[in-house]
Length: 260
Length: 380
Image 1 (tube, rainbow over the protein chains, first blue to last red):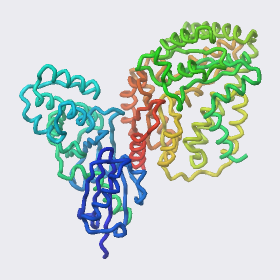
Image 2 (image 1 turned 60 degrees about the horizontal axis):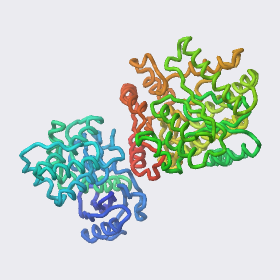
Image 3 (image 1 turned 30 degrees about the horizontal axis):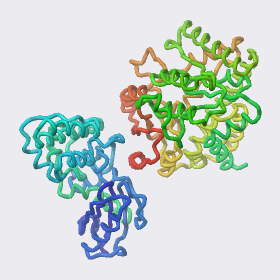
Image 4 (image 1 turned 90 degrees about the horizontal axis):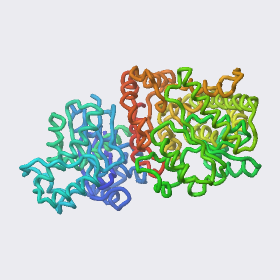
């Protein structure tokens, strides 16, 4: 039987991610470009994933696009909602998953996944940046730290500081007030992580939290948010180094199912 | 005329309310703006004037209304004031301002102040307790006052016969809309969500006798269609309003047919007829208001029984809907307060649903597109 390569591409608001699967089982190549919809990110991510895998577009049996910019990708054979793709991708990585918490650049969503890896129910954040990657970006800028350093700095916190979980703009003002009072940055960062966890935890409880719980999306790389969410929901949360590729992985899996 | 052409005509009317207002004004008619909800529009029609529905705008932005409105007023209410301020509604001779919610109530006074001598502003406060006889009497007294004020605007003393005739015309138009909703749900391949909305919305910008004629002709053609073999999903919509064509097109793109609705601008506005055999037409209109039920904007003394939630859940079951989409108007307190009860009833009935926050000023529906597409996947 011929080898079947399928590509999933997740064009998010802040990053473009690609995964190529071999026979729907093995990840042979992946790529990530840190710009998303409406930029050169998608085409660069595609070129990179093909080059990494030593493959050409013609080698792909099916290309499936997902994410915020999914509708504008001409080379895709089909597009699907990232919610369905995240459910599928998480089930591939964690076969016992029933709850996926995905925090991306501009939205947060909680998915209830069935035993077969299909999406059963979901809830998304309102049209608001609170509890999203964007919230962390804004806070990191105010605190003059790299967003990638937030987890390490937050872990050094000694004193609990409360940051409003209701609005990015108000929370930014609160952070500035805390800085003006001389509050330690690490304590503020820990408060920010708990703020995100409070917001997303509320979403998760709406859809119901059933083990295993998995966190995906770019914010899953921040273990400060992950641990705060574990405390908030009183449950263990798993993640994977492939967390940010999860949507693209799910898209590649759906692509395999489409052409099988 | 083919069904598609008829639908397109309704859609065009729905998209051009100002043209409609100018059309009736050019005939020498006076015009009265009618804001949501439950205004006795029959009285405007009976007085020989054009009732112009006011349900916000999908193309305007809020600017001048901000001078008067708190930021947490819903966009529907703010845009109605905006259109009164920016000249869009300059053809109006009066406006009726019902006060069924905590935003409409203060805004009625904003409009009064803002309009000064520009047009007559007719205040309408329905009774909280509409069921007992005293509630009916109170409604009657409100409607009598409105009748008198409309007579002042029209310069003509409306007779009981004229109001009774208006009731007949409106009952006919409501029956036609109820039938259309059923036919559109039965033939989603012929009536898209965008066109369905256009047909129902056009009712606010036409004289109801003309509208009923036109809709009955469309219904006759829809009735003649062979049974549908719809392969997509069947949904019920709920909320105050969901009339943005860009948003509705997402439903069409994802093969979501609206088989019934619990929308204030749509079915909730034409569910109840007024009695035609009542010698006193004002009493008939008060009875019509008394009979309005299962509406989040109206007081329900049995609300602890969650009658409304169960009514909506039953509507989904009766129409064999796969799920419900709640279009929640941003900052709408009644809708937000009711949501947990609606959710409870839907969950108990095993009806999947999603809730989407909407605002008239939204131009990009990326998040809604993602949610609707995923919901359709789940239901399929």
